[in-house]
Image (cartoon, one colour):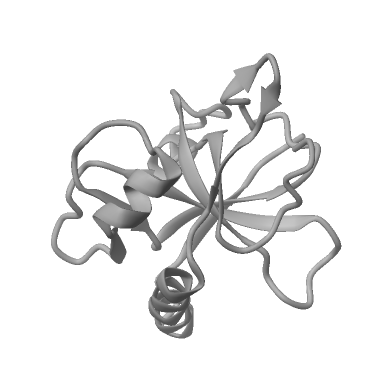
Length: 144
């Protein structure tokens, strides 16, 4: 991850594996996408959970937080459409060192879009905490 240490709120490009793909026996995500890292407490060092960022509006019953336009523009996330952090599906991984991480550029190597602001991440973490309490978060462990 070069000098971007994994910390909650960091946004990176990642080959995300959706749980439905995992359930069909797939081992690799079909495309890389921006994801938001969350570093859980009381877990082995370097363990992270990544939550996908999508431009597809969430369907009823899904758990997501819309990314404010100011956050999306500041991080230069791809596209000009509204975007959401999906919080009911995730991948568990180890960073730095994940084989599923994809650099944004190679010369120089850039691995992160940046970090979401603390106020936005506070809102995300509140929704995530409720989802965890209600056992509504699915984590697909990624292999190295």
